[in-house]
Length: 297
Image: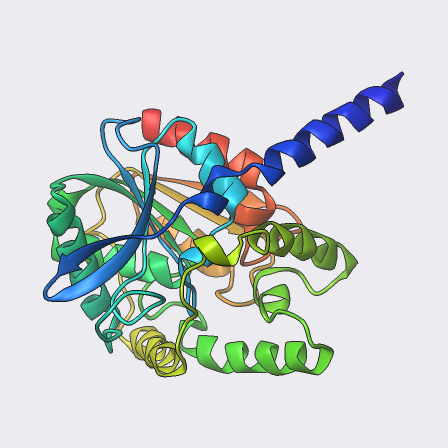
């Protein structure tokens, strides 16, 4: 009987994943500073404020976990964006993290919002911090995932680590995200296959354009520069803040999450076990519940 229930539960879960709405959400475009900027929205009008989610290094709109976005969108209006020079967006990648923050602020203004909730993953979390430094009144609540502060531990080493993991993955002919985002053990392999499998279900009809090499290299230089800059005390972040990571983030060491939690007075910290840089995807169901509770607190 138990086995039968488990099979039914698994079948329902698989059916739900096969009908994830983010997989069939097409790009929309808005002109910002003369450039057509690509973005996607889920559940517009569902919440008082939208949740803008900023993605990691070398990522386009297709690199968000569709399961996670669908779960959050059950309760909240979600917006994701390709910043200038990324994916299908026109323009050039900003050469600095603060420059990317300025681009994001301009995008939000073009959409007509003067207040948002903000989530930043990895490089997106770095941009999110700079957005608050530049325009603190724009952000209501902040979520920082798999990221670190300016001048944080090994933030300036992201470039070297990225190339190392890309080389390792190239030898094995697999997606570099397998090693960048997930633990390098058997369980990490299983978790990465689940998430990357979900992302890979998007068809060409609904696909974004790939990240271009020059933009990727510009992002790497920007992160390195930001990582070598003076350390932040983060006192400028007064918003309620949720900090999330896996216990073994090898890309942006987990120590940074503890450091940010200590420095940001109004913050909560979640560390997921047996997880790395991609913990919010690996723990999509648990994390989505935490996000919804945090935004509705």
